[in-house]
Length: 409
Ligand SMILES: *Cc1c(COP(=O)(O)O)cnc(C)c1O
Image (cartoon, rainbow, N blue to C red; front, side, top):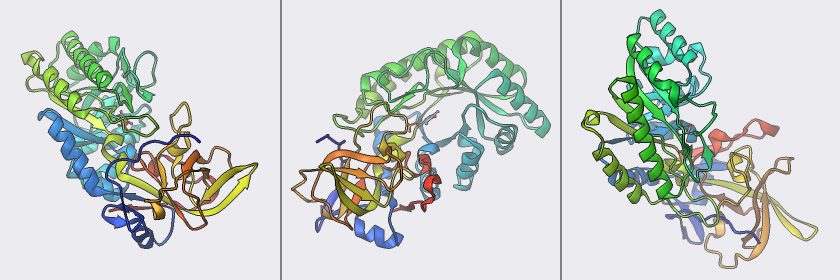
């Protein structure tokens, strides 16, 4: 038997069934008309953001990195909940704008922006987080063609990374951002060219659960932003401190201590020199905001034995929920929290079973040798922590099955 991650708080049984957003799983399946489906609990996202705001310093803006989940109804709801969106492609820029987010509150990072994307961002009035000196040249040229002063920030590749983070995005050689040593000269070029200087974007990593590591990284990030502004001799209007707040996915994971992070950040901001009193600070989060609010529901198509091992075959798979198969940025495959949705209160969860998707590939293994109640055809398997990097981060076209239904409850 192998352990699985913790089921997020807030999921209960009613009449034996898993309840999501106040309704039984069977209600959502009936509404979708088929399985598999993702259900996102909007009220859970509201509560998460309200809690985060109560813990963070009041002057800190909260941005949503929409690549975590760009389902249109969810984006529309998020526009009223967060202070800005961070996008990573022209497609995401268009989604953010059609969700109703004011372009002045959108920033666009990502290595490899093409000229059409750069022009679209400038024309809309979004901020471009520059990832190279060459991109600065192209943004200035596009601004000139359009007759608009582009809003430009610099994404800094910091000299440190977020310790214990699941995905490292800074420290040493990286395709993201501009090495810190090269930044002051580029800041001066942005200002001299007459562009609107929008400050720094410094993102050091993702999926951290250790508050001390996040606190240390935020302190290093602030110190770096101050040092680079001073070296450039230019005031700092905005600073995006990155994010990296993780959620518990795996056995032994415990929630990040948000209160400790917020208190330390409040002190760190208060201790900045007076020249930064008017600087706007932001964090950008994806999975922390939406990850635990999503559940993937998939029906059992077959249960079979092979050499003494029990396989449960569901009508979904990694084409919808790649991350649960361990093939999206994790080094070691560990089990996400899973349960039987129609028998969520089952006490005899002691049969070792492996839940596999329906794809013809050995990597479509969604829960490996986990303890579940005995499973029969027609049962519904719930995979938790499916609100982020599920539908938007899975190879939906692989093998030609239908996409999953998505519902914002
Ligand atoms: C992906 C990404 C995020 C969001 O990461 P999460 O781990 O989902 O919070 C934030 N900022 C940048 C630059 C990213 O690339």
